[in-house]
Length: 247
Image (cartoon, rainbow, N blue to C red; front, side):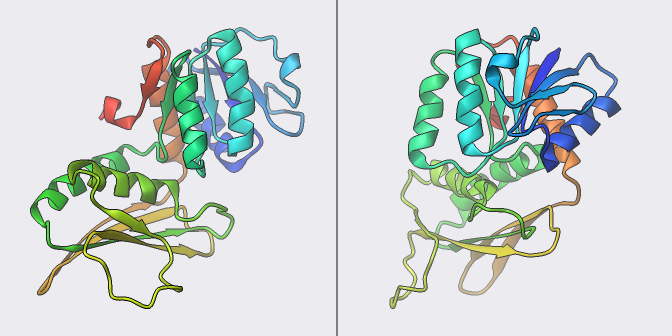
């Protein structure tokens, strides 16, 4: 399987390279795309027009602007793409959905299998603890630019899906001078050090609290998840896929 790695020079790009090198399979990164040209054992281009390799799939760990650059290329050439980039606006997510009508797109805010199992678990909990106050606390390294994390939104959306979309999201209480609304999900973001990623969903009741936490100790889990997604999507029809399809 010939892969184009978008964001090849970044931290997650390096993790995908390591994952490919460690796997006993037919994955091969034949080229990359990034803002700076490089040679990582394969050519990394900074100009889409220079890409000439035969490709089976694109894996994207970049930033939203770069994602849309490579999406244009994917659409033009009919290449499936795995989008692991986060930080998209609502309008950008709608654009990705439009692209999925033309090509297969696998998009997840978190490529960890465990996180997506956690999403399934909290859906079941939310359906039982209907009177609980729900808060999501996420912690990441000091270089992460989006807040709250895409994974935090993923978890909140999972809860809202089974609660008929009645929950509203509260990202900042600083300007509020009112008590907590029962129909809200609150978000808290912590940034510091080199934390890979920690997410806790807390269900606060009157007499007890249930917390479900996931901690990622290595970025390799995301790289390995992206490879599983690439393997899953490579022969799929046009459409929008996510980790639920694998789980």
